[in-house]
Image (cartoon, rainbow, N blue to C red; front, side):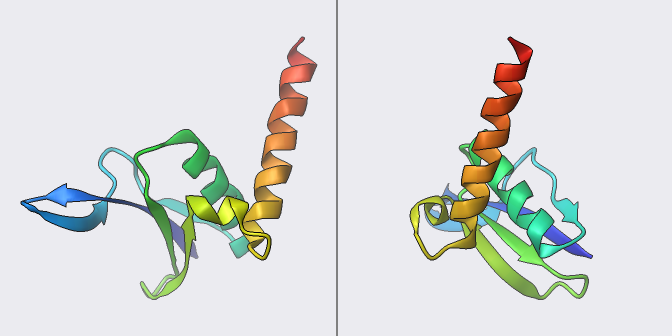
Length: 96
């Protein structure tokens, strides 16, 4: 089982730190592909998330997903982001 942990960066106790994003719970995912789609949706929905840390069932970090990954041509998140945005736009067109 893989889990996405939302992480926020900022000044805390007088120092710049990274810490779990308040009020946003970790999201379990079944696969890395599902984790990528969930990462895109979370990063689009919550500006307070600096990055997402994907960990496996042992707690070992598998990957980090950052908002800037949307714009890097070599990042798998770029294609996922395009697909998610296309789905969201198609859903809006269907509502009309």
